[in-house]
Amino acid sequence: MSSRTVIRGGLVITASDEIHADVLIEDGRIAALAASGTPAAEAFTAERSEMGAPPPEGWGRIIDATGKYVIPGGVDAHTHMEMPFGGTFAADTFETGTRAAAWGGTTTIVDFAVQSVGRTLREGLDAWHDKAEGNCAIDYAFHMIVSDVNPETLKEMDLLIEEGVTSFKQFMAYPGVFYSDDGQILRAMQRSAENGGLIMMHAENGIAIDVLVEQALARGERDPRYHGEVRKALLEAEATHRAIRLAQVAGAPLYVVHVSAQEALAELARARDEGLNVFGETCPQYLFLSTDNLAEPDFEGAKYVCSTPLRPKEHQAALWKGLRTNDLQVVSTDHCPFCFSGQKELGRGDFSKIPNGMPGVENRMDLLHQAVVDGHISRRRWIEIACATPARMFGMYPKKGTIAPGADADVVIYDPHAEQIMSADTHHMNVDYSAYEGKRTTGRVETVLSRGEPVITEREYTGRAGHGVYTPRSTCQYLN
Ligand code: DUC
Ligand code: ZN
Ligand code: ZN
Image 1 (cartoon, helix red, strand yellow):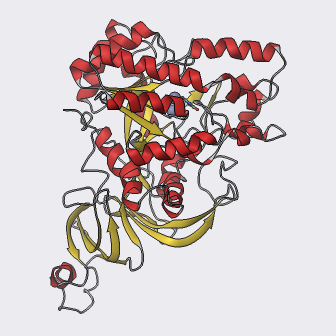
Image 2 (image 1 turned 60 degrees about the vertical axis):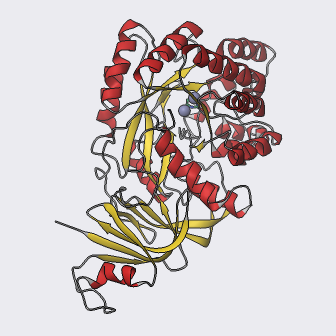
């Protein structure tokens, strides 16, 4: 059955334009845009009713977006639903996590399937398909965490690319778990130089960090704040530099995930100035939170334990600047929630046992809108770093990440004036705390469409588990 929706009277914002336009949606896709109030826009509804008269019953849906923004649904290119970590699992399932994402104006996630050491990529990917299929409220795709580089895995990378899994995360941290040594990294990069894949790097020198962890614990330094002290900015910068040079040697592109240290950002900026295909992502927690949070008393700092760690406040200005100058291109969440009660508490008395990760999939679009309000970035840059660039970076543009004829009708009606207070009492993520508890922000999601279907309707959940489908991706669209 064909379905039609018209979104009337809003300000349509994409990475490139801001226009007062009506948006016609047909069969789940954007069919046309026309300047509001013009005969072309009137024609969107007039075709099946008298000119100017309300369309007949059953015609379709008309959404009045007067005074609101009409923006592409967010693309969160870094989530970990149900991720195993430190003897427990991230608390959001694909069902709860994608619902929360929709509440926050995100309509596509790219989650990380995990290869366990000794297992194939295939097994890991199949397991993630099983977790996600039939459960998601919004569309989803996968990256692959490669924990065990060997000749078989390298061949499997080629096959995964054919299935739309075109990016592979490697870890220079977490020895004995996800860790790859320089040789394994170089081999995977060489392979990606041939097959078009994109290596995503967790850049921290995990071998050195483990020494510092052992020494800190021996000194009796056991509180969450020491997590930030041992995972030094210099060890992020060193690993970032090493990853860049390994990629250069391999002739491969590189995407560095969750950049938090200004010294690491400087390495990226330098490499980009040299003309290398090196890209960087940061996350809202590094832009809005700091080591002050990690130092909160009574073990509350555990809520903010993630890796790379939060940094002293001074780093935030450098990250905002990097986002403005395009030395950083993407803001994703690294959503990896663990409840304070029963999960973060595993690390009471030993910070190294606190599961690493923070919730945020629901907060990203709002926090970045707040950054617009605060003057850090422009409205179009907001859409660029949160929607368009992640879609292009990971081979989904223009299906995702923009509002243009032919694109999936993943659209958010956003009220730029509504005020909200972030809180665990009102959020939809399956986690017992908010990293932004009590934070006041301006701007709020009103309505969310995923392929034309209403998932959130005027702040009511109207979606369903199973609406979201697997979205195979092409290779990175920033490479020549
Ligand atoms: N960092 C986290 O904080 N959690 C999961 C994995 C990671 O790299
Ligand atoms: Zn990581
Ligand atoms: Zn991550």
